Image 1 (cartoon, helix red, strand yellow):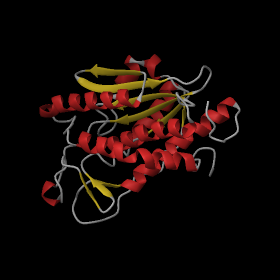
Image 2: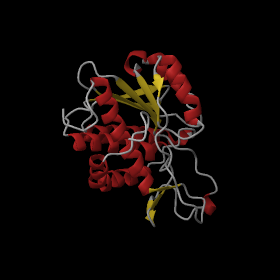
Image 3: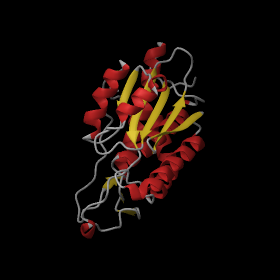
Image 4: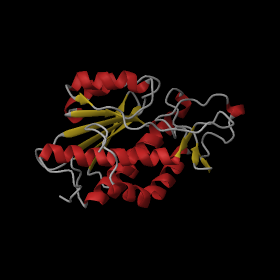
Length: 263
C-alpha cells in the first residue's frame, strides 16, 4: 500500500472493478438522463426521480437499509450497510443533484444525453456527484467480490444530498434532523469543490469524526466543447481506491493483516 490513508488498490479489487464496471457505467448513463437541477423549481420532480432512481440502484446493490429523506421538498437518499459488531463506521457524503447547464451552444453532446467517446463519458454530473456515486457503488460491490464478504469490513453510511450544490447548504439541516443516523467514526466527502470545502469540515466537526483525505480525483482529458466529461479509467481508479480503503481500514480495526481475506 502507498500509505495508511490512500492504500494502493490490490489486484483483487482491480479485477473486481473491471468485471463489474460495464454494469455500473450503464447505470450511470441511464441516471444521467434525469435533469435533477435542484436550483430550478421547474425540475423539482426530476430531483425526486433522481433520488428514487438512486434508491432503487442501492437496493439492487444489496444495501440493507435505504431511506429517502425529504426536507422542505428536497429529497436526499440515506443508505446504511452495517459491518460486524465492533467495526468502525465510515460516512460517505456526496450529492445527486446537478447544476443548470451553461454555455449549451458549446457542448458537443447534449448534457442529458450521455455519450462515450474515446474512453470518456460526456454528460452533466458525470465528474461531480453522480459520477462519484457510481464509483462508490462500484467500489463497495468490488470490495465484497474481492474479499468474499457478505457485508463490508467497515460499517458504511451513505448520504446523497438532494441539494448539495453549490455549497452543501442543506447539510446543516440534515445534520440537525438526523444526528443519530449520520453518526460515524470516519467521514469521507466525495464531492468536487466547492462542495467538499464546505462539507468536509462541517461533517468532521458536527459528528466528532475523523475526516479522511479525498479519494483520487476524477479526471478528464482536454478536448473540444464545454461538455462535462470524465475519463472512464479515473472512475475505475476511484472505485478501486474505495474498495481497498474499506478492506485495509477494516483489517487495521480488527487487528488482521492486510491480505484481503474473506470474513
